[in-house]
Image (cartoon, rainbow, N blue to C red; front, side):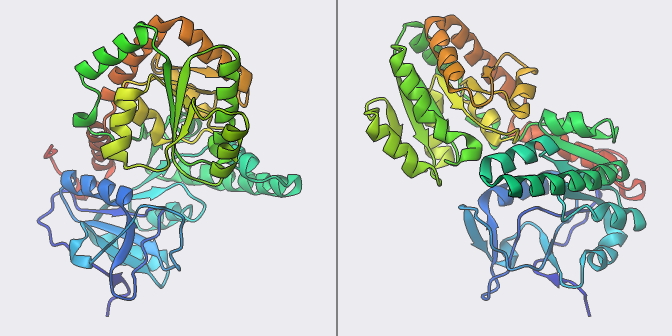
Length: 415
């Protein structure tokens, strides 16, 4: 009798061996047998399945499965591009059963997964961690979300302890896949088999076209009102409470502009109240949540000259690459993720963290120097074209394949 709760099985004549993924998201099985997952997670695994020449298993602990994601979908076991294993008897037992034909394990550098380094070492399984948040970023998130100073102090102590565990896991895993420059710069000295990538959901066929770019640069160079935008969760960690204040400062500076805000979240009501109180309704529009591929990307591509990003922490958000793919540069706070991107290419401008006046001054400067804005539009599209969803996932698969167990590694890549 198996020790695993296997939801779906996919027979394969593999040459790569089994790829085991331990995600950060939960995949609870509903009473009717359907699995709850997010569309973003499903799309990523489908890309893995298209490029990995072997079976894919997803391993999760058995929990109640609550999360705050908004893009849930429900699929039957036969519709999944992977086998789901839920570890009722613990992760160690699950990996013992999967060890024989597993080529490589892909985990997330999370406090719930630091034990994977020891488990995989004991079973002689190569382990690659995905990393996203540095200690500094995690502390910035706590700073933005927690108003109680004592509670923030407790959280900082906890995060410092967790960071020591992370560094141990990084030193003792096979390799790292670092989303964004902050964790790459923090962890690559501890593990030489580290890959830098920039996360994006935008495929090559969704990039701004040459015609889009020509139309946008012509619009901005003729001196038309600046078209500003923000998209994302309306929360303090994303700095969205600063957006109407920036709009107010721009109006005082005589800048002609429109600011479109896409998204929903806890700050939405306060933003709306500020807009009404300061009579900014003609300049600032709250558009709610719209379909990413069908509405948001086309709108940012055709109707946005500059993206205003007030992120208070170094989260390597998909927003950056997705905005660049629309030939749209970014003006943002100097968090470590955005600062790292600006070291890669001239694709935007950074100002001091939480400095609304500096943000408004920078936008006002660009309003008077439209040639710089047009040049950044071209650079943004070029940078995104080098980091499309397809290119990124292929690079990551190649890294997994090169890091896999020699006995299960193919002699030649099928790509």
